[in-house]
Length: 167
Image 1 (cartoon, rainbow, N blue to C red):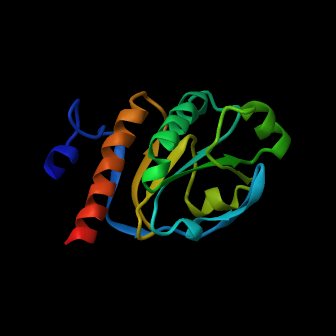
Image 2: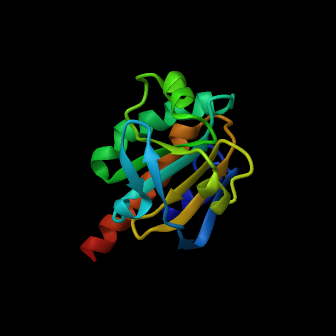
């Protein structure tokens, strides 16, 4: 089954997704949350974490963030977290744009220091961190199919964790 998932095309993960093999340790950070306490990436160890860097002025982000919210609602009870990391904007701008549409945490990287540590040069830029805290996928831009690709990746990572726990 993993062979099918590693390919591209209609049956596998899109060719625009970069798999990082072997995974590399994700750089820990702490950022203020738009409406809540500060969040540290390391607090999510043991879960799969999807992090997307975005901004309100970014057209493609306006399409990717709702898809990430759908994935968050679908997978949050299965060990998946989604962090929506706003790049370089005020809390007021992020709050006005987001409204009440998102239940996934919105984090504020106002000085873009975390984005710089992750070499974010264009947005949206998405990273997937596995349960051990390793970066395993990177994706830039939005071309559609985000929910489908995330489902394939998340199901793969969650199945691997289940198999490891059972083995």
